[in-house]
Length: 202
Image 1: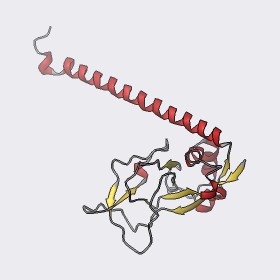
Image 2 (image 1 turned 90 degrees about the horizontal axis):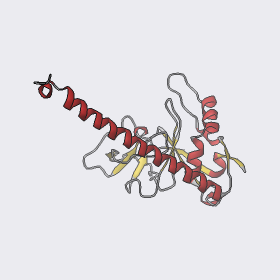
Image 3 (image 1 turned 90 degrees about the vertical axis):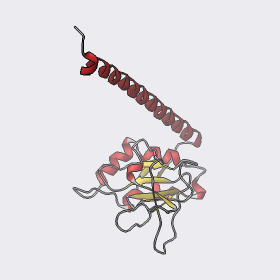
Image 4 (image 1 turned 60 degrees about the vertical axis):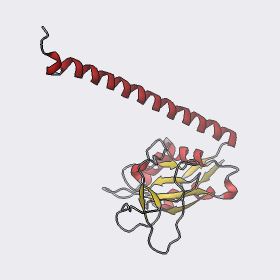
């Protein structure tokens, strides 16, 4: 089934912060910024800025299944809010569009699958061709709303998501092996090459 993103999801900008987002010692709101996401679709919640919100606008608290789409910058990609991944009161910065699957569409569209599809070549080609600006490239809301999507069966969506998770886990495992090997090499180099350790050798 072919649809556009606006057929299955509501789309709005992230929280309208004015200026830079400043950390507050006694803050009670966590903020997801672009630096807290990566192109694999994951959110790193370990270093979120904690602040306080001002103004009268009621916050759109992030919830499991929300999709954060990076709308401004050199790269445009989607990250998924996993269940339990974020603190209770969290918002996203206005550099994102907050994409939330409509309640009546959960039967045909899994949030994780939609986030994954937005990061694949067909959608990425669409964003590349539709982006505006030269030095500071951005995707307009209308462009995101009109993103063409394909919805296979829910079972197939689950299969594709599972494959993606396996690929991510494999990548993380390989990265850990690479880092461990580099640590070993660094330790060997330090032992073999430091002058104090080399003294007295032929």
